[in-house]
Image (cartoon, rainbow, N blue to C red; front, side, top):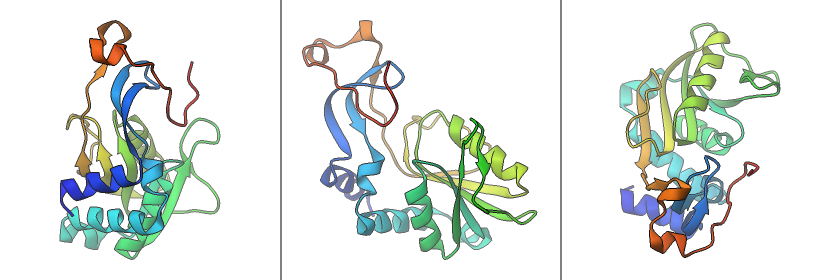
Amino acid sequence: MQEEDILSEFRASQALLEGHFLLSSGRHSAYYLQCARVLMDPMRASRLASALAAKLPRDLRQQISKVVSPAMGGVIIGHEMGRALGVEAVFVERPTGTFELRRGFTLNPGEKVLMVEDVVTTGLSSREAILAVEEAGGVVVAEAALVDRSAGAVDLGVPFYPLVSLNFPTYAPDELPPALAAVPAIKPGSRAQP
């Protein structure tokens, strides 16, 4: 799957939006990416996961015995990556603010894990999820994500394989280009906005 094919999947599902958006960070952007929408269609999610799995080096794919993803955003793509790789997929969640395995999910000591996310921006949640896997006895050998929004700057401490990199400019409220300032801002996403 080529980059334009991937972006077509995002546009077809209305996951890649254009307008004026107030992001959860407080910054503004002319673009907004809502990965949950691209994963609504199981066939599309399967195609994207297969393309992402194909980006992993063959020797790495052979090491992986489990996929772990952070809840909520990574659950669907993590499950589909498990299917694409032929391994189990589980997730970590934050019932008390810190990622942990729950629901009877376990890792064997030294078990080789692929961390899977929908979007990586700063890498903070990925690093926290990797720590949870390590505390549970697993070894994260790499991370894969549908989208890298870090402009290639993220350091997760493990090899990182994004399906696509999307780097849209963002602006502080006092830096808005005139064309963007002329359009009312919309607060998208799943996080509560101030």
